[in-house]
Length: 440
Image 1 (cartoon, rainbow, N blue to C red):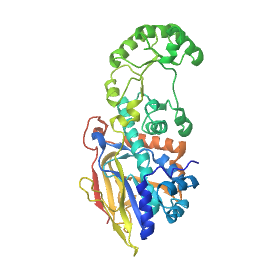
Image 2 (tube, rainbow, N blue to C red):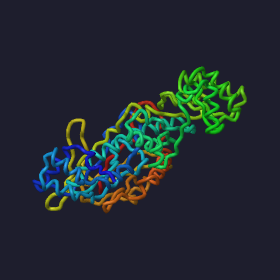
Image 3 (tube, one colour):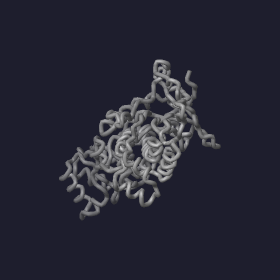
């Protein structure tokens, strides 16, 4: 099991060392992950990466190699190194379920423990949640634009090799049905897909030879790439070789609305009425929406998806919101910097509903010692937080391939709660407001 302990920033370790020296390391603290705003003028965000994060926190261990590096390059004293050698996160993490929607101020994740054990997780938490949530939010918008037409993720060649796996996972949670990435299939149980690239056609002496060979290998239900040369000739050759039972054709270039219409007309004229059309050329949610009235059957999305469709990070932050004093009392704390104000205190969150449609995000703030609100106190709302990590272990419901399936199902249900205005792609205010209330 590879350690994730050095997937962090040095200042977290230097704060730890200083806290061990001045006696504040063991103060009980509450850290919170939230976004001050939704980047890109989007109307909602999608929480993703939670299951990955929980597994990485379990791997957050400082072994001999990590400690040797820190001793030689980070200037840590032996007291700090000894503390790190025994590190295990023993606190509690609660938060929004993976696949849930979030809005500005939503307490997406709450980390409770000593200052020392919680502060060192900041970079790991944010690097995973910010990237995965950005991809999932873009994917959800693409799924809205696609409607009932299937989407496949195929952006591995446009991302870091590990980010590609994370992106495939996040996209699947938010509505994509399959991925081209085999590691994502192996690790997370996501259906995989893929047939041939232009290199396959160029390898052969003719397009017809390439198509015949592909059909011999994969059967007539395969999808043939028809735009290596002339698309009209490609369609004719595909049906001549495969017959009218050809599974599909893929278009990767040209003016897609016009080309798709022409290809559909040609396929129908040749009697291939059931042959599907997939398009894959630099799509984003706007291009997909523009194809809604065309005879396209499926979409493959790459670059735009794995880069968050112009918003590569969700903009989440990790802030201390409450801490315990030496006498055991709790104190709410908050950053007051201009344009970066945060709300102190432990929080519970609920989504108010009217006949199943979301009205507002209710965030109830406690000083830290007051009891948190329970669902019974909000009968017309849905509780948004659940326990994710306790007793030194991730809750098994939220990790692995089973966690991905649960997150995908949860996302499909909660997107149905959104008012119609949430489904528009144009820049706007969040679909529902966030309302802060003090605990009684």
